[in-house]
Image 1 (tube, rainbow over the protein chains, first blue to last red):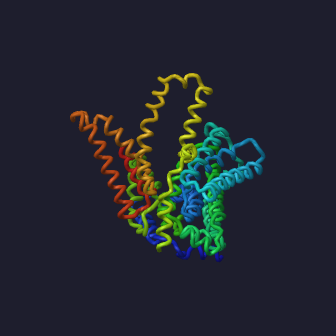
Image 2 (image 1 turned 90 degrees about the vertical axis):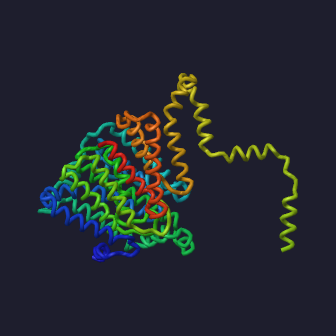
Image 3 (image 1 turned 135 degrees about the vertical axis):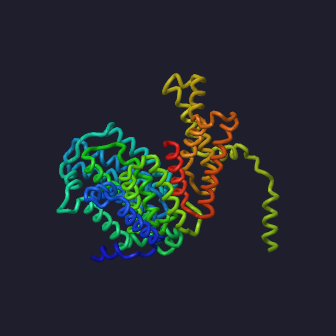
Length: 313
Length: 155
């Protein structure tokens, strides 16, 4: 229960979260008024299923951005998870293998960034290439079959509520619990806010950074499982866009890319904004390229209105 | 105060060390690792494929990698100030579109050259103002500028 209240209260160090929530509310009202098909139950469940992958991967990304880093390899980890789920192995082995692979990539990222002092973008770009290559080796073309229970747990619904909502709530509650109910969450804010001060006060900065990357990879693994269930097959390039989209979603939700400021609620709101923009423009039959222009303009508008103290990433 | 002054003077007056070999070694060790990787690749190339020794093939590689090299030069300017410019690909696509579509066919040739440059300057100015004055996040703002440019090109 505590976790739930922590999720709904405006948390500390949340950045420009009120702006994001305001944008989301305005967009919801506008789309309900101007688009008659928006509130139809099929469209809402479709919207949820579309944006759950983005939300889950963006939650993982939030941990990394809070430390002042950036994880581009999220997309490839999603892809490699969907391909591993189609392998010809016992189902429990597949799940364990997915988690092990994701953890290995997370540890590699974290070790490179925290101990070897590689720049986060370079390090995760490198592991992104490795993971993408492995995914294409495992499954060169989209196809294969995922376990029955996985696609059932994604596509079905309990009563009127689609299952993807449960995935979403479960993932965000887990993230909120880690960030607001564990010492690790406090360490994250501390080491992202000021590396030196955190070290002086006894925060294990290196270990925190490594854990953040591992968490990001694990959330990406969960997002990949959801995607595999939704497609009911593997896709070696299915997650390619999520690497950068998850960063965008987190930034829309007021998470500072310099580190130390951000919140789980903000990330969920940011991902929801992105998902609703996509959905509304698809409903209104806007061409895919014009959509990209509109999305870019919206992003610029939101980012410009968030004041920051320093110039930086 | 006096002591430190004499100390530094004594230090500056020491004659240059004659160990040139040592300095050469340290200079070589201080080179960026990319040089070593390039040297190893060039050394290994003949073992991989015989066509790689052919100088004509080198020019093919050079031609292929020239655009990337110029883009890297652009990116390295931004990276010097600890920032990043993701809109390079967008400007790239937009310049190609301006130069190759029939859009500027009726104008003299120099317009075809100057127009992409002007657009590039304008985009760069927008990015710079966003990042430096408004202090927006460099990743997000340049990414969205890139998305806008690519969207304009495709429509």
